[in-house]
Length: 294
Ligand SMILES: C[S@@+](CC[C@H](N)C(=O)[O-])C[C@H]1O[C@@H](n2cnc3c(N)ncnc32)[C@H](O)[C@@H]1O
Image (cartoon, rainbow, N blue to C red; front, side, top):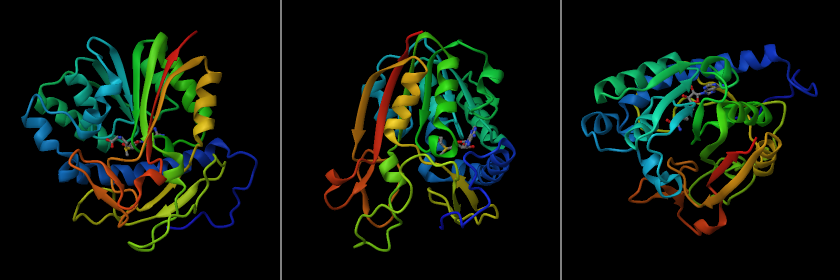
């Protein structure tokens, strides 16, 4: 892992060609990882396919704050291999899933078919979501768990979320906390917690070159470079407010559903990872809810 070297990207804002190059690089990484994720025990695809009552651990965690979503027209942005999308379908929502990775959508469609679930999967970038799905047609936008860090501009994301929702429709996002995304890589199990990367949104992405992935797999990957952007919590909230969204809930959690700081975290019986020592030090994830007011 390394930060982007001193680069020609130091313009006040990245131009769209450059952003598209970053997204193409990211897509290659996701296309390669999607089948490995579907085969990994971490995503529990076999359990979800064979047990019609099963829900993903992520959606199980969300349920108390999510409430009753039966009958809602929902879209899952950056749905990946569709495990959470299927779970939302099982809670009674009429779901669409959107992702820019054809390989991820292939897995999502295969899971939905095996589970007998009618879910509409659409290939698009988040920025293209309104063109792909139409404006104002959704009661619920659901997203998160490693989604926002792939998007260069949080204000563009908030604009898309608001445009997808009907007036009165709601956003539900549980996401890795921007403080977590800014943590330095642990050097070992006794590594002190330290901030190593930007907390606030920067025009230039952070470049990573990492061979593995965040779930268990023996697969060796060829496409290991990715580009990511952090967005501060205030930037996320303000971007939504500026789009006419009223914030209806903001809860911070001390856990995440993946081993975000390897060697420093322990797994609980719900599939959540938190710091082994004094987890109260770190906001690891948050759940943000908002309603479209205009
Ligand atoms: C970590 S997954 C998050 C999804 C979900 N939480 C999960 O784990 O199943 C990130 C997803 O975002 C998608 N993605 C990344 N950048 C995107 C973009 N600009 N537009 C649409 N999808 C994107 C990737 O293809 C990947 O499937």
